[in-house]
Image (tube, rainbow, N blue to C red):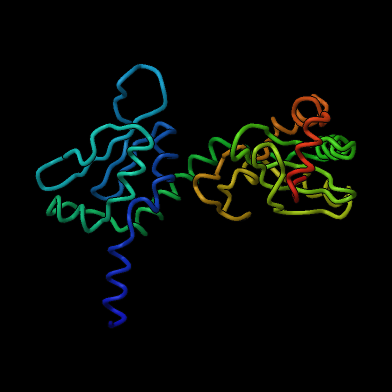
Length: 251
């Protein structure tokens, strides 16, 4: 096969599922987003209560047409994963359908614009950093505790300060470590909600599902310092300790 045919085949195989989480994140903020002739917005729910529903529209020569009727999150994500720009062009001749790369670029710019409004860039400062460092030094962990993904947590492992992804309440995937309290404290003091949100290109743009998802924030840090650890009790009871021993590699 020629390089050209491979490129065309790969492009056509790319679905809107690649940008599904970006679409949901932007629409959940209350903003309809339109990229060229493709529009996503909140849809009408079956009941007054519950999570948002979503719909997709196309603007073409015949005006605005509904591509996907209002539907719940799982159904909408599944539908996006089955759509390609080419299939939508065939379904709606003459409509100005963007490529997935064009969608991604525009949606990321919109997400960044939203994030700068939602997340403060004010640095946490030395006082809060010192309070968090002192609390962690007692053995307390800052970690959400529920089923499945629990966001980002902080802990001390021996003398090493650790930032890790939390799963089922346990710090599992280490993201960064600091050898001393002074190093950790200096780092935390210059962080901000925006820097830790996952939206900041300067600190590494994260996958849309992770952005703003149980990240480190000033509120969490303040609550952790005030509450005495583990964002609740600051102590692992014996049952937790026994469970932790069975989970090798977890902090």
